[in-house]
Amino acid sequence: MNNYIISGTKEYRFDAQKAKDGCVRWIREFFEAHGKGCNAVVGISGGKDSSIVAALCVEALGRERVIGVLMPCGEQPDIDKAELLVRHLGIRHFTINIKSAVDALTGSIPFELSAQSRMNLPPRIRMSTLYAVSQSNNGRVANTCNLSEDWVGYST
Image 1 (tube, one colour):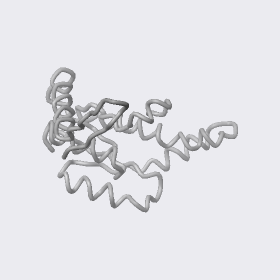
Image 2 (cartoon, rainbow, N blue to C red):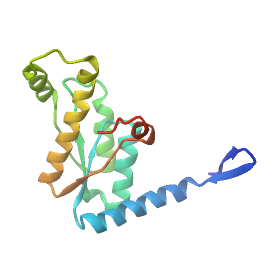
Image 3 (cartoon, one colour):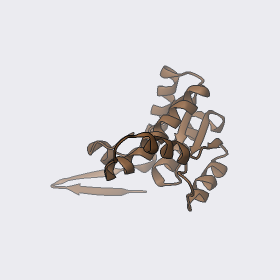
Image 4 (cartoon, rainbow, N blue to C red):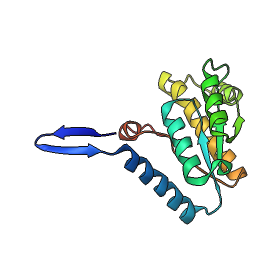
């Protein structure tokens, strides 16, 4: 596929295959240097970011070295998308409902949480959950945030 981006007077060709192959190579090299033989642990939401990261890790490391973690907060109507992905990729996975952890923490804080704190708490509990799964399964957590999230300082 040829995608061209024109910026001023310069024309750039985006090569999706080359970009994907570069990501796969980087993942292999990272795991070789920082955890030879360990697993990639990916939080699976069913969205495009986590789906792409999981697929890249499967290509780079093999499905036997990728663990998906589904983390609904109570009922999640679209959890079937995440389940479809882990089945499609053929990866080992765990479903860990974080609602009781969120409720316990919000219930033990002795003041009213701000709306922003309430909104950000579940993603941060998901991050802690991923690290617990990773440390218990010879893993490394794979980051699924995108560049725009990093730029605004929202990456867990």
